[in-house]
Length: 212
Ligand SMILES: [Zn+2]
Image 1 (cartoon, helix red, strand yellow):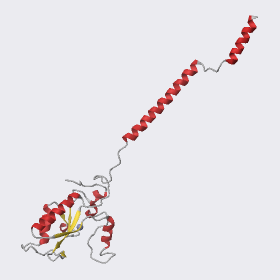
Image 2 (tube, protein in one colour):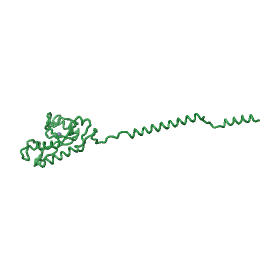
Image 3 (cartoon, protein in one colour):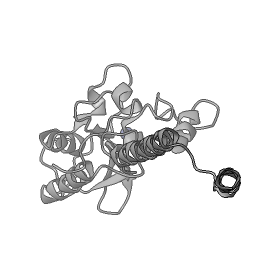
Image 4 (tube, rainbow, N blue to C red):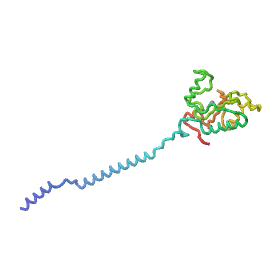
């Protein structure tokens, strides 16, 4: 009998058939997979882009950043050397007694003549002196016998002019400003180059160039 057989076949066939997702569903799932993949690729690409475009970290000794100063500015150092050489030629020997001073050293110096014995030599605390940014030097005169003196009237080269003021005049020609010209606190051994920066600018991280 053909009919029951056919029915039987159909039944067998249905049971034995592997599960197949309908075409419509299959297509939708493939589209979804593609979208997820595209999203992952786009996100990954955007992440790479962010990483690549991240600004490079500022170098340690950046002249424009708030880098910590650890020594005399090279231009100031060069000018101080020139001052020693120039005054030497006119018979005046000078000694650079102080150049760069850390904030800690400045604070210790501030205590001198206040909470500690000695003469007051500064009226500013750490971070408020050009010495703290490597932009100042202090000088003294050296007598032929090697004595270091702060005598502003001494005329060792015997030309009728005080050696001290001859040094100051040479320093000013080199671009230094003299602490003896200050009105509030006269600092006679002090020479500085501010490069147009105020202490506030320096405290805010501005730094003058290291080369001319
Ligand atoms: Zn000084």
